[in-house]
Image (cartoon, rainbow, N blue to C red; front, side):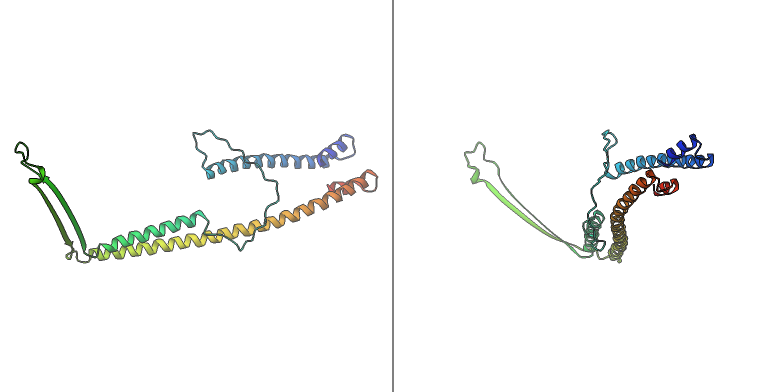
Length: 234
């Protein structure tokens, strides 16, 4: 709008070439910024496709529409860490480490195995007019075994100790990731809360500026305001 007004004044001899070139360079820089923003939007769209996992062979091209509704209020102090995917993954990893450690420690104790079996059969009953029940036999057996390795010279004890240390190290790493995740979520929530406030204030400022510009435009058309005040208000 500014450039069109200055250009028209320059064509009519009312504006200097210096003013015309100054506004023309501003328009050129704005056009470059517009191209850069368009490329940024394209890169962001591809990044969103990667985040939501769009298959390569599907040929899907989702359209990300802008939500023009007012953002909902959010409390920065109310961050639900337990509902995050990383927290659930950490919980499953903790259960896995506990089971693995328990299995390693179980090898320190003797192993008791009990096996049992039973069989029933009959023989030499064909062609002798004998019933199967006359020559049938039933057998059973039970075996109880105790296995204990007492010549390992502490190998299994060291394996159990190593498994316990690994579980502790893994737990510390998980805690560090969860602490960093909680801090990141709180920071994102704080930033979003600030953006909400800026959005509300921006709406109020936009309404005020629109009213001010309408008044300035009316005064400029009535000859009560000069051109510089009109451009500044715009």
